[in-house]
Length: 465
Image 1: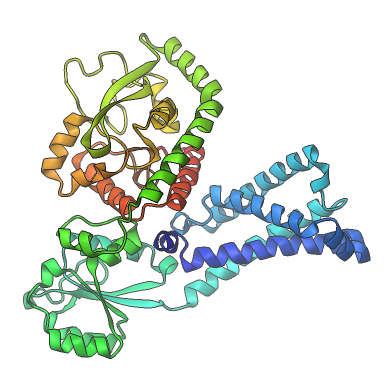
Image 2: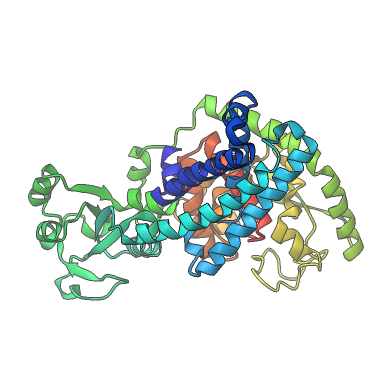
C-alpha cells in the first residue's frame, strides 16, 4: 500500500496537503487572536481550540480533494484553479456553518470563523501561485534512460512526460539495439543511442536510473560495463516495475510470468481475506440500508419511464471463474439483445439504453442492487468488475493473463473504474486488466478505502468512468 500512496501522493501533492493544512490551521489561530484578543490563547487551550481548528482543516481538505485540486493535469488555466479553490472553500464554509448550527460547542469564538475563512482563501490561493512558480523552477529529481522502444516503454514515457512536473522525472531518451534507429523520433525525446552507448550516455547525461525492457534487450546488454555502472551508483530496473510505479497498472505486453512470480506483492493471506470479507459485510450492509430509499425512487423511475421490470438479472463470472447472478436496475429496453446477442455497450448514444438509463449509468445508481451480491458473498465492495461469460471466454483467448483477474472476488467498484473510462472494446478490456492486476498485486484494506473514496468523488463530479 505504501507504493500505491507514493503513486497517488506525489511530492507535489504531499507538500500541498501538509502546507495547506498548516495554513488553514494558522488562519483559524490568527483569526482567534484578532477577534478574541489576549484571551485567545486561553480559549484555544481550555476550550479544545486545537481540535476545533483541526476540524476546520479536515473539512476544507476534503472539499479541496473532491474539487480535484490535487489532480495537476487538470489545470492549464490559472483562472480555473482559482474558481475551484473558491468553490471548494465556499462548500467547506457551508458544511462548517451547518455543523456549527447543529453543534454550537464546535464554534471557536464569535466572528472567528468568517475572519478565518477570508484568511484561508487568500493564503491558499497565494500559496498555490507561489508553489507553482517554485516547483516549475526546480529541476527533475530523477533522470531516466529507457532501454527499448516497445509499446509499454512508449506508454510509460508518454505518461511520465504528461506528469513530468508533478512527478519530478525526466526521460533522457531511448536506447534501441538497431544502430539505424539512432536519431529516430519516438515521443519527446527520441532514440539517442544503442546498447553499447549506455555507459557513455549515463555518464554524459547524469542518468539516475536505467529502465530495461528485457523483451527488447535480452542477450544484448554489455553486462560487464553495466555492472561497473551499478557499482558506481547507477540504478537499473525492470520496465514492468517502473511502469507499475508511475502508472498504477501492470503492463502485460511482453510481461513474463516470472516477473509476477518473483515480484513483491500478491500477498493474499488468510487474515487479509477474512478482514476484507468482514469489511464487505459491515459496509455492504450499511450501504444497502442507507441506499434503500434511493433504490426505491430509482425503481419507480425505471418503471415509469419504460416498459418492463425495474431489476435486471444477468450471469457474470466471479471468484475462480464460478458463475453467479448479478442484480442491476434495468438501464436498457427489454430484450435489447434479442436480435444481436451479447455485444459491448456503446460508450455514447447506445440506442438500447432507456431515457433514464444514461443517467443511471453515469451516476452508477444502476449498480446499487449489487450491495445484495456483496452480502451474499458473490462480490466484494472493491475488486475487478465482473464480466459476462461470453466476453470472458473471448478475452481470455485474446489477452494474456486475463484469467488471473478471477483470483479475487469481483467488485461493486474497482481500481480500474476510478482510473479508466467506460470500457466497450477489447483494447479497453486490456487497459482495465492492467489496472486490475495492479489492484490484485497491492491488495489491502487501505487501498479498498482509497478506491471507495475515489468512487464517491467520481460520482459527485459525474465523470462516469
